[in-house]
Image (cartoon, rainbow, N blue to C red):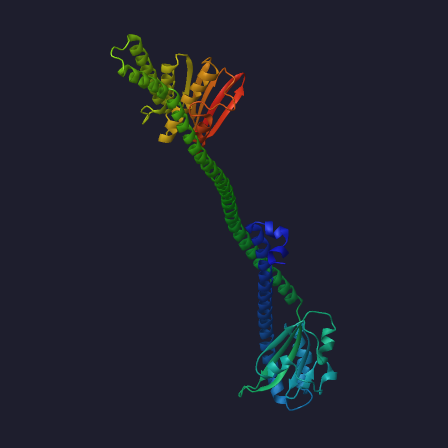
Length: 455
């Protein structure tokens, strides 16, 4: 199974804009979610750090004089205990501090809001280690450690701050203050900042996606329109190729039939010359030989010889007249049709109705001019032989790149085994070699010989 076979039918038939909307929407959604998460996390870190820094500075200024005097002890001094229990709660920051711890080196708690923790040692947490390294550490609503489970059990949003306490002159870190600040407003501010970030990133991403979709959709429509045009042109080219193949076969068949027709025409001309003028000339030759042995030829013999020679000359002229074309160069279609009709009427004095409906003068090739003349010539000859020249009409219609010529009469039409003049097969070959169409049919009691050719 190929990848194309495994592709759903919807995806295969979908436009470029639809594919972009699906794939681009997924990518954009992932990007917006990641960007929103990074932005809100960054905002959380900044807000928590700023709040923690303010609280740490306050506690450092409050605690470090007390801690520096009693850091060696394992329990708070009376002054430290009084300051932490009476003075600190009275301050603005102290009212928000739920509990506190003061750590010394080794994880020992020397002061705490919970008396049970004083003097106990706990493992150093990551935040406590950061504070001993000189950095203020803060976490908001984190999981509880062993020593601060009581604070987290209150169920309030807590800001846990680890602040290093330094000595006045040396700057040495002598203790770490751990504070638990109740700050419901901080949680609300973080939630509002998170929603604002999501709205900003989502709105910006959605706007960008819509703009890009509009651009891709316009391009997709252009591509679809061009693809439809190409498909239509390809179909036209296929039809044209099939038509060219058909015309090529017709031209090849017409060329073969034309060769056979030409050979047949030459045989008919030879037969006409042999059976007509040749017989008269042979008779005149025999009579002349006989007269050569007679001292005084009789006048009637001379008259018979003269009549035979006259008949031979007349037949030769008649045969030649049908073979030789008049000058057709630069003549329009209507003039060629009139010339052929006039030549026929000069031989056969019968009326011929001529109807010419040409829109302008369509361009004609030399082969097309000869074809028009021969078509009218053969059509009128057939009408004279088979219809007696009764009710003969020639109609020429031209325009919109098409030329149609019709010769109609009131006769029954030639029989299947009759081949007069140039012959219907020769006419068909001429017309089809020009890429045209040819027909002989009965319509409304009349015989119509017609041809159509593109100009």
